[in-house]
Length: 584
Image (cartoon, rainbow, N blue to C red):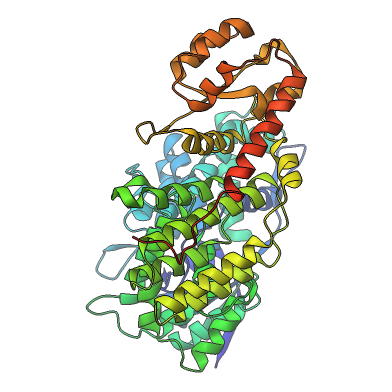
């Protein structure tokens, strides 16, 4: 492999007649506001203003840039450094806009024609940095001198726009005045500072410019430069490996299309998590239990041994991503059949508990159901157990989850390998046995339960408390006619009545309708009791049948203990049908 390395300025890169292309295997633009701010501070801090207002510059090294091509190449592929080049292009575009706004179109056009756009030998314009993924948004809304102002339609486009808006804000008169410690900036000084920033970027930022001759070598360099995980995640490295195996892009770039679909599915719902989280969960459900840092190591081992087919790998990832999104962030429309509603409720509860270690197993559980190795009743009962377990173990007791994710991963792989109904059910029975041994005892549960709080300034546990009341309502209702979909929380002792923390305790809360909640307001305890009697909630009716004479800290703590006992006993002391006994 032959490499050539030189020191270059940004002007050296962009002022020549070359096009820098972001290859298909590269990750999407992902710079955060913090990274943009850090680069901006480094650029501006290298511009010095003396007492006479004279500006001087210091050189600043921004890392290496690795490209495929040579000095004769008109188009060069970016192997490493596309995030920095994209960010600098965005900054130059923001400077363009500022010069347009102060009626210095000649300066704007100079930046645009020298560093952002170019002309080929036939007089046709092209952008010097070319990225197909966010096209045409990046080109029309950020790069072009006459910006259209279109709305972003993807996560990457939103990130690109955020970076542009950050630089646009940084280059305002007010913020530049603060940065250069000036009480005020007149038009002349403002133009002078904008020019200084332009010069700092194009003349004084230095890169190590490395070129390699062949695209195949680019993939190798890409992996080598990032093998230690300093810049890229294991998902980016897997993507690089998979893309390398697809040599043709006609009539369609299969890898790029599938990867775009994969990312779109994972980002389509809030609460699903990152692409890295999904790929790791998918991996440990199918291959072996490992940390995120070691996924690529295991992937590469199987890849080199020929055990992974790139086409099947991509297709299965995309297929399972849709199922993963559904189990991670369920919506009622996912489970339209009445007999599937309990599945939705259990998945929604797990989302409330904000846990994810169970997802690899549930992914395999659904796939076993799809293969008809499990019945609907098996799935419902299994999810019901997991819901109750994680409610007690995580949401209430906050116990250490050591070993649990490993158990889920093992069970998930065993379900994938199951060949019939009996073997699939045996996997579930063994997992439930393992988890049952770690169910918190009554005292630990009561202690954790007593810490549940809801106040105006402490709302993080509101959904969890609503879940508790929904659960208790579901076991106290004598018919199926009433289904509490939305519970408002009423403080029996009003928040304005006491500053004690016990006012926010779950023992001082009742489930009640919104209108009755408004009617109760800050009324006295006796007056509130009459309003509570109008509620259809079983818990609230139960409270009004034998109310205490007074209501204070002691009564609240007593009711908290009583609710904890009811909740624990209903979950763990009632006879539970096992998945083996369930029927669809």
